[in-house]
View 1 (cartoon, rainbow, N blue to C red):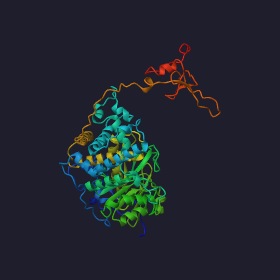
View 2: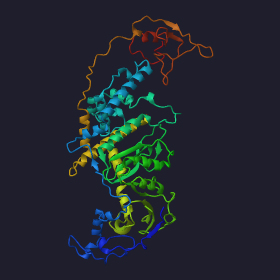
View 3: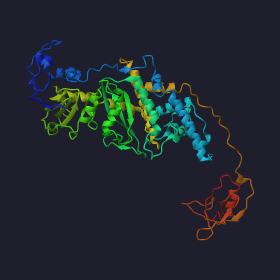
View 4: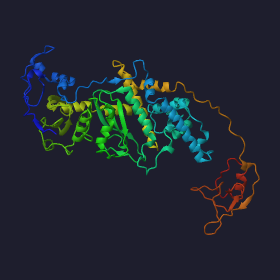
Length: 575
Protein backbone atom coordinates (compact mmCIF):
# COMPACT_ATOMS: atom_id res chain seq x y z
CA UNK A 1 0.00 0.00 0.00
CA UNK A 2 1.08 3.61 -0.49
CA UNK A 3 2.88 5.36 2.32
CA UNK A 4 0.52 6.96 4.79
CA UNK A 5 0.03 10.73 4.71
CA UNK A 6 -0.72 12.18 8.14
CA UNK A 7 -3.32 14.91 8.56
CA UNK A 8 -4.46 16.85 11.63
CA UNK A 9 -6.73 19.84 12.00
CA UNK A 10 -3.62 22.03 12.51
CA UNK A 11 -1.45 20.60 9.73
CA UNK A 12 -3.77 20.54 6.72
CA UNK A 13 -3.63 23.40 4.22
CA UNK A 14 -6.12 26.25 4.38
CA UNK A 15 -8.94 26.27 1.89
CA UNK A 16 -9.81 29.33 -0.15
CA UNK A 17 -12.51 31.34 1.53
CA UNK A 18 -14.74 31.58 -1.52
CA UNK A 19 -14.89 27.79 -1.93
CA UNK A 20 -16.96 27.17 1.22
CA UNK A 21 -19.67 28.77 3.25
CA UNK A 22 -17.92 30.25 6.25
CA UNK A 23 -19.10 27.78 8.88
CA UNK A 24 -17.75 24.74 7.00
CA UNK A 25 -14.03 24.21 6.79
CA UNK A 26 -11.35 21.71 6.02
CA UNK A 27 -8.70 20.97 8.61
CA UNK A 28 -6.43 23.98 9.13
CA UNK A 29 -8.99 26.77 8.81
CA UNK A 30 -8.91 29.22 11.69
CA UNK A 31 -11.17 28.50 14.64
CA UNK A 32 -12.58 32.03 14.81
CA UNK A 33 -15.11 32.20 11.99
CA UNK A 34 -17.05 35.25 13.13
CA UNK A 35 -14.86 37.72 11.21
CA UNK A 36 -15.23 35.97 7.88
CA UNK A 37 -17.27 37.80 5.25
CA UNK A 38 -19.80 36.02 3.08
CA UNK A 39 -19.13 36.50 -0.60
CA UNK A 40 -22.82 36.31 -1.46
CA UNK A 41 -26.16 36.05 0.30
CA UNK A 42 -29.35 35.02 -1.42
CA UNK A 43 -31.64 36.41 1.25
CA UNK A 44 -29.77 39.69 1.79
CA UNK A 45 -28.94 39.16 5.45
CA UNK A 46 -26.06 41.09 6.98
CA UNK A 47 -22.81 39.58 8.18
CA UNK A 48 -23.96 39.21 11.78
CA UNK A 49 -27.04 37.21 10.74
CA UNK A 50 -25.01 35.04 8.41
CA UNK A 51 -22.54 34.16 11.17
CA UNK A 52 -25.30 33.30 13.62
CA UNK A 53 -26.24 29.78 14.77
CA UNK A 54 -29.60 29.87 12.98
CA UNK A 55 -27.98 29.97 9.52
CA UNK A 56 -25.31 27.51 10.63
CA UNK A 57 -28.00 25.02 11.62
CA UNK A 58 -29.98 25.65 8.44
CA UNK A 59 -26.98 25.12 6.19
CA UNK A 60 -25.82 22.09 8.18
CA UNK A 61 -29.26 20.51 7.93
CA UNK A 62 -29.28 20.86 4.14
CA UNK A 63 -25.79 19.29 3.90
CA UNK A 64 -24.61 21.90 1.37
CA UNK A 65 -21.05 20.76 2.05
CA UNK A 66 -21.52 17.09 1.39
CA UNK A 67 -20.54 17.10 -2.29
CA UNK A 68 -17.16 18.50 -1.23
CA UNK A 69 -16.72 15.88 1.49
CA UNK A 70 -16.08 13.02 -0.93
CA UNK A 71 -12.89 11.78 -2.48
CA UNK A 72 -13.60 8.87 -4.80
CA UNK A 73 -11.96 9.69 -8.12
CA UNK A 74 -10.69 6.10 -8.12
CA UNK A 75 -14.30 4.82 -7.94
CA UNK A 76 -16.16 7.08 -10.34
CA UNK A 77 -19.68 8.45 -10.30
CA UNK A 78 -22.74 6.35 -9.52
CA UNK A 79 -24.84 6.15 -12.70
CA UNK A 80 -27.47 3.48 -11.99
CA UNK A 81 -31.19 4.22 -12.30
CA UNK A 82 -32.32 3.82 -8.69
CA UNK A 83 -35.92 3.15 -7.67
CA UNK A 84 -38.77 0.87 -8.81
CA UNK A 85 -38.05 -1.10 -11.98
CA UNK A 86 -41.15 -3.18 -12.72
CA UNK A 87 -44.16 -1.28 -11.40
CA UNK A 88 -45.75 2.08 -12.06
CA UNK A 89 -48.19 4.48 -10.47
CA UNK A 90 -51.14 2.25 -11.43
CA UNK A 91 -49.76 -0.75 -9.56
CA UNK A 92 -51.73 -1.67 -6.45
CA UNK A 93 -50.18 -2.83 -3.19
CA UNK A 94 -51.38 -6.34 -4.06
CA UNK A 95 -49.64 -6.24 -7.46
CA UNK A 96 -46.32 -5.40 -5.81
CA UNK A 97 -46.72 -7.91 -2.95
CA UNK A 98 -47.73 -10.61 -5.43
CA UNK A 99 -44.47 -10.07 -7.31
CA UNK A 100 -42.59 -11.06 -4.13
CA UNK A 101 -44.85 -13.94 -3.02
CA UNK A 102 -45.70 -15.06 -6.51
CA UNK A 103 -47.75 -17.93 -7.94
CA UNK A 104 -44.71 -20.22 -8.02
CA UNK A 105 -44.29 -19.89 -4.26
CA UNK A 106 -48.01 -20.28 -3.61
CA UNK A 107 -48.14 -23.46 -5.69
CA UNK A 108 -45.07 -24.72 -3.84
CA UNK A 109 -46.75 -24.08 -0.48
CA UNK A 110 -49.92 -25.86 -1.60
CA UNK A 111 -48.06 -28.89 -2.92
CA UNK A 112 -45.70 -29.33 0.03
CA UNK A 113 -48.39 -28.60 2.64
CA UNK A 114 -50.74 -31.27 1.25
CA UNK A 115 -47.86 -33.72 0.97
CA UNK A 116 -46.76 -33.11 4.56
CA UNK A 117 -50.33 -33.41 5.90
CA UNK A 118 -50.78 -36.78 4.20
CA UNK A 119 -47.45 -37.87 5.64
CA UNK A 120 -48.57 -36.90 9.15
CA UNK A 121 -51.82 -38.85 8.73
CA UNK A 122 -49.99 -41.90 7.45
CA UNK A 123 -47.51 -41.86 10.33
CA UNK A 124 -50.21 -41.27 12.95
CA UNK A 125 -52.23 -44.31 11.91
CA UNK A 126 -55.39 -43.76 13.98
CA UNK A 127 -56.39 -40.07 13.72
CA UNK A 128 -59.84 -40.41 15.30
CA UNK A 129 -58.75 -38.31 18.28
CA UNK A 130 -56.54 -35.91 16.29
CA UNK A 131 -57.36 -32.67 14.50
CA UNK A 132 -55.86 -34.34 11.42
CA UNK A 133 -59.11 -36.30 11.17
CA UNK A 134 -60.76 -33.34 9.47
CA UNK A 135 -57.93 -32.57 7.05
CA UNK A 136 -58.81 -31.67 3.48
CA UNK A 137 -56.28 -30.64 0.86
CA UNK A 138 -55.66 -26.91 0.66
CA UNK A 139 -55.45 -24.76 -2.48
CA UNK A 140 -53.96 -21.45 -3.61
CA UNK A 141 -56.93 -19.35 -2.52
CA UNK A 142 -56.89 -20.83 0.97
CA UNK A 143 -53.12 -20.29 1.29
CA UNK A 144 -53.66 -16.65 0.31
CA UNK A 145 -56.36 -16.42 2.99
CA UNK A 146 -53.92 -17.96 5.49
CA UNK A 147 -51.31 -15.30 4.60
CA UNK A 148 -54.00 -12.62 4.96
CA UNK A 149 -54.76 -13.86 8.48
CA UNK A 150 -51.04 -13.84 9.37
CA UNK A 151 -50.85 -10.21 8.25
CA UNK A 152 -54.04 -9.43 10.15
CA UNK A 153 -52.75 -10.95 13.40
CA UNK A 154 -50.19 -8.16 13.62
CA UNK A 155 -52.88 -5.48 13.53
CA UNK A 156 -54.92 -7.04 16.35
CA UNK A 157 -52.53 -7.91 19.16
CA UNK A 158 -53.37 -10.74 21.56
CA UNK A 159 -51.23 -12.95 23.74
CA UNK A 160 -52.34 -16.22 22.16
CA UNK A 161 -53.57 -17.37 18.76
CA UNK A 162 -56.81 -18.67 20.31
CA UNK A 163 -57.76 -15.20 21.52
CA UNK A 164 -58.34 -14.01 17.96
CA UNK A 165 -61.26 -16.45 17.71
CA UNK A 166 -62.59 -15.75 21.21
CA UNK A 167 -66.25 -14.84 21.59
CA UNK A 168 -65.65 -12.99 24.86
CA UNK A 169 -67.02 -9.47 24.59
CA UNK A 170 -63.61 -7.94 25.29
CA UNK A 171 -61.69 -10.00 22.72
CA UNK A 172 -64.34 -10.69 20.08
CA UNK A 173 -63.16 -10.08 16.49
CA UNK A 174 -65.70 -11.77 14.19
CA UNK A 175 -63.57 -11.08 11.11
CA UNK A 176 -61.19 -13.94 11.85
CA UNK A 177 -64.06 -16.42 12.37
CA UNK A 178 -65.76 -15.28 9.18
CA UNK A 179 -62.65 -16.11 7.12
CA UNK A 180 -61.47 -19.38 8.65
CA UNK A 181 -62.34 -21.52 11.64
CA UNK A 182 -59.88 -21.65 14.49
CA UNK A 183 -59.27 -25.38 14.04
CA UNK A 184 -58.62 -25.01 10.32
CA UNK A 185 -56.16 -22.17 10.93
CA UNK A 186 -54.28 -24.23 13.51
CA UNK A 187 -54.25 -27.20 11.17
CA UNK A 188 -52.77 -25.11 8.35
CA UNK A 189 -50.26 -23.58 10.75
CA UNK A 190 -49.23 -27.08 11.79
CA UNK A 191 -48.99 -28.49 8.25
CA UNK A 192 -47.70 -25.49 6.29
CA UNK A 193 -44.51 -26.52 4.51
CA UNK A 194 -42.13 -25.07 1.94
CA UNK A 195 -39.92 -28.06 1.06
CA UNK A 196 -40.04 -31.84 0.97
CA UNK A 197 -38.33 -33.07 4.15
CA UNK A 198 -37.24 -36.22 2.34
CA UNK A 199 -34.89 -34.11 0.20
CA UNK A 200 -32.86 -32.94 3.21
CA UNK A 201 -29.27 -34.19 3.41
CA UNK A 202 -28.16 -36.06 6.54
CA UNK A 203 -26.36 -34.03 9.19
CA UNK A 204 -23.08 -35.85 8.62
CA UNK A 205 -23.06 -34.80 4.95
CA UNK A 206 -20.55 -31.97 4.30
CA UNK A 207 -23.19 -30.14 2.23
CA UNK A 208 -25.81 -30.31 4.98
CA UNK A 209 -27.76 -27.03 5.19
CA UNK A 210 -29.08 -25.99 8.60
CA UNK A 211 -31.57 -23.64 6.93
CA UNK A 212 -32.82 -26.21 4.42
CA UNK A 213 -36.48 -25.76 5.42
CA UNK A 214 -36.50 -22.07 4.48
CA UNK A 215 -33.54 -21.66 2.09
CA UNK A 216 -35.31 -22.07 -1.25
CA UNK A 217 -38.25 -19.88 -0.27
CA UNK A 218 -35.99 -17.15 1.13
CA UNK A 219 -33.69 -17.12 -1.91
CA UNK A 220 -36.67 -16.91 -4.28
CA UNK A 221 -38.33 -14.05 -2.40
CA UNK A 222 -35.06 -12.08 -2.02
CA UNK A 223 -34.37 -12.50 -5.74
CA UNK A 224 -37.80 -10.99 -6.41
CA UNK A 225 -36.86 -8.07 -4.12
CA UNK A 226 -33.85 -7.39 -6.34
CA UNK A 227 -35.76 -7.41 -9.62
CA UNK A 228 -38.43 -4.97 -8.44
CA UNK A 229 -36.25 -2.16 -7.07
CA UNK A 230 -32.67 -0.90 -7.24
CA UNK A 231 -31.11 1.03 -4.34
CA UNK A 232 -29.55 4.48 -4.46
CA UNK A 233 -25.81 5.12 -4.23
CA UNK A 234 -25.73 4.75 -0.44
CA UNK A 235 -26.59 1.39 1.11
CA UNK A 236 -26.07 0.00 4.61
CA UNK A 237 -25.21 -3.43 5.96
CA UNK A 238 -26.42 -4.50 9.40
CA UNK A 239 -28.11 -7.34 11.25
CA UNK A 240 -31.86 -7.76 11.63
CA UNK A 241 -33.02 -9.90 14.58
CA UNK A 242 -35.84 -12.43 14.14
CA UNK A 243 -37.05 -12.93 17.70
CA UNK A 244 -37.11 -16.60 18.74
CA UNK A 245 -36.50 -18.35 22.07
CA UNK A 246 -36.99 -21.94 20.96
CA UNK A 247 -34.43 -24.55 20.01
CA UNK A 248 -32.32 -23.90 16.93
CA UNK A 249 -28.63 -24.46 16.32
CA UNK A 250 -27.91 -20.91 15.12
CA UNK A 251 -29.75 -18.79 17.68
CA UNK A 252 -27.80 -15.66 18.64
CA UNK A 253 -27.78 -13.31 21.63
CA UNK A 254 -27.92 -9.53 21.21
CA UNK A 255 -27.75 -7.90 24.67
CA UNK A 256 -28.35 -4.37 23.32
CA UNK A 257 -31.32 -5.24 21.11
CA UNK A 258 -34.99 -5.02 22.20
CA UNK A 259 -35.34 -8.71 21.29
CA UNK A 260 -32.20 -10.18 22.72
CA UNK A 261 -32.53 -13.80 21.58
CA UNK A 262 -33.32 -14.94 18.11
CA UNK A 263 -31.99 -15.61 14.66
CA UNK A 264 -29.92 -13.10 12.71
CA UNK A 265 -30.63 -12.03 9.15
CA UNK A 266 -27.69 -10.16 7.62
CA UNK A 267 -29.30 -7.41 5.58
CA UNK A 268 -28.31 -4.93 2.89
CA UNK A 269 -30.82 -2.08 2.64
CA UNK A 270 -31.17 1.19 0.75
CA UNK A 271 -30.08 4.03 3.07
CA UNK A 272 -32.68 6.44 1.70
CA UNK A 273 -35.84 4.33 1.84
CA UNK A 274 -34.99 1.30 3.99
CA UNK A 275 -35.81 -1.10 1.13
CA UNK A 276 -34.41 -4.56 1.92
CA UNK A 277 -32.40 -5.44 -1.18
CA UNK A 278 -30.55 -8.53 0.04
CA UNK A 279 -30.79 -10.76 3.09
CA UNK A 280 -28.90 -13.84 4.27
CA UNK A 281 -29.83 -15.99 7.26
CA UNK A 282 -26.94 -16.47 9.68
CA UNK A 283 -26.44 -20.19 10.31
CA UNK A 284 -22.98 -20.08 11.89
CA UNK A 285 -19.52 -18.83 11.05
CA UNK A 286 -18.17 -19.83 7.66
CA UNK A 287 -14.44 -19.17 7.47
CA UNK A 288 -13.72 -21.40 4.50
CA UNK A 289 -13.05 -18.41 2.24
CA UNK A 290 -11.81 -15.85 4.78
CA UNK A 291 -12.93 -14.05 7.89
CA UNK A 292 -16.60 -14.66 8.65
CA UNK A 293 -17.65 -10.99 8.68
CA UNK A 294 -15.77 -10.30 5.44
CA UNK A 295 -17.45 -13.25 3.74
CA UNK A 296 -20.85 -12.03 4.98
CA UNK A 297 -20.44 -8.51 3.59
CA UNK A 298 -19.00 -9.71 0.28
CA UNK A 299 -21.92 -12.13 -0.19
CA UNK A 300 -24.45 -9.40 0.58
CA UNK A 301 -22.79 -7.06 -1.91
CA UNK A 302 -22.67 -9.55 -4.80
CA UNK A 303 -25.79 -8.07 -6.55
CA UNK A 304 -24.27 -4.56 -6.51
CA UNK A 305 -20.65 -5.47 -7.33
CA UNK A 306 -19.03 -2.97 -9.69
CA UNK A 307 -21.95 -0.51 -9.47
CA UNK A 308 -19.97 2.20 -7.55
CA UNK A 309 -22.13 2.11 -4.44
CA UNK A 310 -21.05 3.47 -1.06
CA UNK A 311 -21.54 0.74 1.54
CA UNK A 312 -21.97 1.83 5.18
CA UNK A 313 -21.49 -0.60 8.08
CA UNK A 314 -20.71 -0.63 11.80
CA UNK A 315 -17.52 -1.74 13.53
CA UNK A 316 -18.64 -5.37 13.69
CA UNK A 317 -17.85 -5.66 9.98
CA UNK A 318 -15.47 -2.87 8.99
CA UNK A 319 -11.75 -3.54 8.63
CA UNK A 320 -8.96 -2.36 6.31
CA UNK A 321 -8.84 -5.78 4.63
CA UNK A 322 -12.60 -5.77 3.91
CA UNK A 323 -12.60 -2.21 2.56
CA UNK A 324 -9.69 -3.10 0.27
CA UNK A 325 -11.64 -6.10 -1.05
CA UNK A 326 -14.71 -3.93 -1.64
CA UNK A 327 -12.59 -1.36 -3.48
CA UNK A 328 -11.26 -4.12 -5.74
CA UNK A 329 -14.90 -5.00 -6.54
CA UNK A 330 -15.83 -1.43 -7.47
CA UNK A 331 -17.49 -0.47 -4.18
CA UNK A 332 -16.71 2.33 -1.75
CA UNK A 333 -17.21 1.87 1.98
CA UNK A 334 -17.44 3.77 5.25
CA UNK A 335 -17.87 2.52 8.78
CA UNK A 336 -16.92 2.88 12.40
CA UNK A 337 -13.72 1.03 13.24
CA UNK A 338 -12.38 -1.07 16.08
CA UNK A 339 -8.82 0.15 16.40
CA UNK A 340 -7.50 -3.34 17.13
CA UNK A 341 -8.28 -4.41 13.57
CA UNK A 342 -5.29 -5.59 11.60
CA UNK A 343 -3.93 -2.79 9.42
CA UNK A 344 -5.03 0.12 11.61
CA UNK A 345 -2.20 2.72 11.84
CA UNK A 346 -0.60 3.39 15.21
CA UNK A 347 -1.45 7.08 14.85
CA UNK A 348 -5.16 6.15 15.05
CA UNK A 349 -4.72 3.47 17.70
CA UNK A 350 -2.85 5.85 20.00
CA UNK A 351 -4.76 9.01 19.09
CA UNK A 352 -6.35 10.88 21.98
CA UNK A 353 -7.75 14.07 20.43
CA UNK A 354 -9.31 16.76 22.57
CA UNK A 355 -13.05 17.45 22.32
CA UNK A 356 -13.78 18.73 18.83
CA UNK A 357 -10.36 17.81 17.46
CA UNK A 358 -9.72 15.25 14.74
CA UNK A 359 -6.83 13.10 13.61
CA UNK A 360 -6.64 11.86 10.00
CA UNK A 361 -4.39 9.18 8.54
CA UNK A 362 -4.44 8.21 4.88
CA UNK A 363 -3.10 4.93 3.52
CA UNK A 364 -3.79 4.75 -0.23
CA UNK A 365 -7.58 4.69 -0.67
CA UNK A 366 -8.13 4.21 3.07
CA UNK A 367 -8.82 7.25 5.24
CA UNK A 368 -8.65 6.65 9.01
CA UNK A 369 -10.38 9.21 11.27
CA UNK A 370 -10.22 9.65 15.03
CA UNK A 371 -12.48 12.30 16.59
CA UNK A 372 -13.69 13.08 20.10
CA UNK A 373 -16.95 14.60 21.29
CA UNK A 374 -18.24 12.84 24.40
CA UNK A 375 -15.93 9.93 23.65
CA UNK A 376 -13.46 8.91 21.01
CA UNK A 377 -14.90 7.71 17.68
CA UNK A 378 -12.84 6.00 14.99
CA UNK A 379 -14.03 5.77 11.39
CA UNK A 380 -12.60 4.18 8.25
CA UNK A 381 -13.62 5.33 4.76
CA UNK A 382 -12.58 4.91 1.15
CA UNK A 383 -14.93 7.59 -0.25
CA UNK A 384 -14.45 10.65 2.00
CA UNK A 385 -11.79 13.29 2.56
CA UNK A 386 -10.64 15.08 5.71
CA UNK A 387 -13.12 17.95 5.51
CA UNK A 388 -14.74 19.09 8.78
CA UNK A 389 -17.57 21.46 9.62
CA UNK A 390 -19.08 23.23 12.63
CA UNK A 391 -22.09 21.43 14.06
CA UNK A 392 -24.53 22.93 16.55
CA UNK A 393 -25.55 20.40 19.20
CA UNK A 394 -27.74 20.62 22.27
CA UNK A 395 -26.21 20.80 25.73
CA UNK A 396 -27.90 18.13 27.84
CA UNK A 397 -31.69 18.38 27.91
CA UNK A 398 -31.89 22.15 28.19
CA UNK A 399 -32.28 24.92 25.58
CA UNK A 400 -28.56 25.71 25.45
CA UNK A 401 -26.47 24.71 22.44
CA UNK A 402 -22.79 24.44 21.70
CA UNK A 403 -20.81 24.33 18.47
CA UNK A 404 -18.36 21.52 17.82
CA UNK A 405 -16.06 20.82 14.89
CA UNK A 406 -16.93 17.45 13.31
CA UNK A 407 -15.49 15.42 10.40
CA UNK A 408 -17.89 15.25 7.48
CA UNK A 409 -17.19 11.51 7.09
CA UNK A 410 -18.68 10.85 10.54
CA UNK A 411 -21.72 13.02 9.82
CA UNK A 412 -22.37 11.21 6.53
CA UNK A 413 -21.92 7.85 8.24
CA UNK A 414 -24.62 8.87 10.75
CA UNK A 415 -26.93 9.93 7.93
CA UNK A 416 -26.56 6.84 5.74
CA UNK A 417 -26.00 3.99 8.20
CA UNK A 418 -29.64 3.71 9.25
CA UNK A 419 -31.12 1.89 6.24
CA UNK A 420 -31.54 -1.46 8.00
CA UNK A 421 -32.79 0.22 11.19
CA UNK A 422 -35.38 2.08 9.14
CA UNK A 423 -36.51 -1.22 7.60
CA UNK A 424 -36.70 -2.85 11.06
CA UNK A 425 -38.91 -0.06 12.37
CA UNK A 426 -41.36 -0.65 9.53
CA UNK A 427 -41.17 -4.44 9.88
CA UNK A 428 -41.82 -4.48 13.63
CA UNK A 429 -44.80 -2.12 13.41
CA UNK A 430 -47.20 -4.97 12.63
CA UNK A 431 -45.04 -8.11 12.91
CA UNK A 432 -47.02 -10.57 15.03
CA UNK A 433 -44.95 -12.15 17.81
CA UNK A 434 -46.84 -15.31 18.80
CA UNK A 435 -44.69 -18.19 19.90
CA UNK A 436 -43.81 -20.99 17.51
CA UNK A 437 -41.97 -24.22 18.25
CA UNK A 438 -40.54 -24.36 14.72
CA UNK A 439 -37.86 -21.78 13.94
CA UNK A 440 -38.40 -21.71 10.18
CA UNK A 441 -42.01 -20.58 10.60
CA UNK A 442 -40.70 -17.49 12.40
CA UNK A 443 -38.45 -16.79 9.41
CA UNK A 444 -41.37 -17.42 7.02
CA UNK A 445 -43.57 -14.88 8.83
CA UNK A 446 -40.63 -12.43 8.95
CA UNK A 447 -40.24 -12.71 5.15
CA UNK A 448 -43.96 -12.05 4.68
CA UNK A 449 -43.54 -8.87 6.72
CA UNK A 450 -40.44 -7.79 4.76
CA UNK A 451 -42.41 -8.37 1.55
CA UNK A 452 -45.16 -6.05 2.76
CA UNK A 453 -42.67 -3.37 3.84
CA UNK A 454 -40.84 -3.47 0.50
CA UNK A 455 -44.18 -3.28 -1.33
CA UNK A 456 -45.10 -0.29 0.84
CA UNK A 457 -41.82 1.48 -0.03
CA UNK A 458 -42.33 0.94 -3.77
CA UNK A 459 -45.93 2.12 -3.53
CA UNK A 460 -44.82 5.28 -1.75
CA UNK A 461 -42.14 5.99 -4.37
CA UNK A 462 -44.89 6.80 -6.89
CA UNK A 463 -46.66 9.14 -4.43
CA UNK A 464 -43.94 11.35 -2.92
CA UNK A 465 -46.36 14.17 -2.13
CA UNK A 466 -49.03 11.99 -0.51
CA UNK A 467 -49.27 10.74 3.06
CA UNK A 468 -49.59 7.00 2.48
CA UNK A 469 -50.67 5.24 5.68
CA UNK A 470 -49.30 1.74 6.11
CA UNK A 471 -52.32 0.51 8.09
CA UNK A 472 -54.74 1.36 5.30
CA UNK A 473 -52.52 -0.27 2.69
CA UNK A 474 -52.22 -3.35 4.88
CA UNK A 475 -56.01 -3.65 5.10
CA UNK A 476 -56.23 -3.16 1.33
CA UNK A 477 -53.70 -5.95 0.81
CA UNK A 478 -55.60 -8.28 3.17
CA UNK A 479 -58.86 -7.62 1.29
CA UNK A 480 -57.13 -8.33 -2.04
CA UNK A 481 -55.69 -11.61 -0.76
CA UNK A 482 -59.20 -12.67 0.30
CA UNK A 483 -60.90 -11.56 -2.94
CA UNK A 484 -61.21 -15.06 -4.47
CA UNK A 485 -61.63 -16.98 -1.21
CA UNK A 486 -64.90 -18.16 0.27
CA UNK A 487 -65.02 -20.12 3.49
CA UNK A 488 -66.40 -23.62 2.83
CA UNK A 489 -69.93 -23.95 4.12
CA UNK A 490 -70.15 -26.37 7.04
CA UNK A 491 -73.70 -27.27 7.94
CA UNK A 492 -73.91 -27.99 11.64
CA UNK A 493 -75.52 -31.37 12.24
CA UNK A 494 -77.22 -32.75 15.34
CA UNK A 495 -75.14 -34.60 17.85
CA UNK A 496 -75.48 -38.35 17.75
CA UNK A 497 -78.10 -39.56 20.21
CA UNK A 498 -76.93 -43.16 20.23
CA UNK A 499 -76.18 -44.12 23.86
CA UNK A 500 -72.76 -45.51 24.83
CA UNK A 501 -72.41 -49.29 24.51
CA UNK A 502 -71.85 -49.62 28.25
CA UNK A 503 -75.54 -48.68 28.69
CA UNK A 504 -76.95 -51.27 26.28
CA UNK A 505 -74.78 -54.39 26.35
CA UNK A 506 -74.70 -57.22 28.89
CA UNK A 507 -72.05 -56.79 31.63
CA UNK A 508 -70.98 -58.89 34.63
CA UNK A 509 -68.92 -58.29 37.73
CA UNK A 510 -65.61 -60.17 37.92
CA UNK A 511 -62.42 -60.23 40.00
CA UNK A 512 -59.45 -58.31 38.60
CA UNK A 513 -56.86 -60.97 37.72
CA UNK A 514 -53.97 -58.52 37.28
CA UNK A 515 -51.05 -58.90 39.68
CA UNK A 516 -48.48 -56.48 41.04
CA UNK A 517 -44.75 -57.14 40.41
CA UNK A 518 -44.66 -58.69 43.92
CA UNK A 519 -47.40 -61.15 42.98
CA UNK A 520 -50.22 -59.49 44.93
CA UNK A 521 -53.63 -58.75 43.51
CA UNK A 522 -53.99 -55.24 42.13
CA UNK A 523 -56.58 -52.85 43.55
CA UNK A 524 -56.91 -49.93 41.12
CA UNK A 525 -59.10 -46.88 41.69
CA UNK A 526 -62.82 -47.20 41.04
CA UNK A 527 -63.77 -45.24 37.92
CA UNK A 528 -67.05 -44.15 39.50
CA UNK A 529 -66.43 -43.04 43.06
CA UNK A 530 -62.66 -42.61 43.41
CA UNK A 531 -61.16 -39.16 43.00
CA UNK A 532 -57.51 -38.62 43.80
CA UNK A 533 -56.84 -35.56 45.89
CA UNK A 534 -60.35 -35.73 47.41
CA UNK A 535 -61.08 -39.31 48.42
CA UNK A 536 -59.50 -42.36 46.88
CA UNK A 537 -61.41 -45.68 46.71
CA UNK A 538 -59.64 -48.82 45.49
CA UNK A 539 -61.35 -52.06 44.50
CA UNK A 540 -60.35 -55.59 43.34
CA UNK A 541 -63.53 -55.83 41.24
CA UNK A 542 -64.07 -54.84 37.64
CA UNK A 543 -66.34 -55.09 34.62
CA UNK A 544 -64.65 -57.58 32.33
CA UNK A 545 -66.45 -56.40 29.19
CA UNK A 546 -65.61 -52.71 29.78
CA UNK A 547 -62.18 -53.49 31.29
CA UNK A 548 -62.79 -50.87 33.99
CA UNK A 549 -62.31 -51.26 37.77
CA UNK A 550 -65.38 -50.45 39.85
CA UNK A 551 -67.09 -51.33 43.13
CA UNK A 552 -69.68 -54.12 42.77
CA UNK A 553 -72.32 -51.95 44.46
CA UNK A 554 -73.59 -49.41 43.80
CA UNK A 555 -70.90 -48.29 41.30
CA UNK A 556 -71.37 -51.20 38.86
CA UNK A 557 -75.05 -50.45 38.41
CA UNK A 558 -74.47 -46.70 38.20
CA UNK A 559 -71.77 -47.06 35.55
CA UNK A 560 -74.01 -49.16 33.31
CA UNK A 561 -77.25 -47.19 33.67
CA UNK A 562 -76.30 -43.48 33.76
CA UNK A 563 -74.64 -41.27 31.15
CA UNK A 564 -73.12 -39.11 33.89
CA UNK A 565 -72.01 -41.84 36.26
CA UNK A 566 -69.42 -40.10 38.48
CA UNK A 567 -70.28 -40.09 42.21
CA UNK A 568 -68.80 -38.75 45.43
CA UNK A 569 -67.44 -41.45 47.71
CA UNK A 570 -69.06 -41.22 51.15
CA UNK A 571 -70.11 -43.66 53.88
CA UNK A 572 -73.78 -43.13 53.02
CA UNK A 573 -73.08 -43.85 49.33
CA UNK A 574 -71.60 -47.30 50.09
CA UNK A 575 -74.24 -48.45 52.63
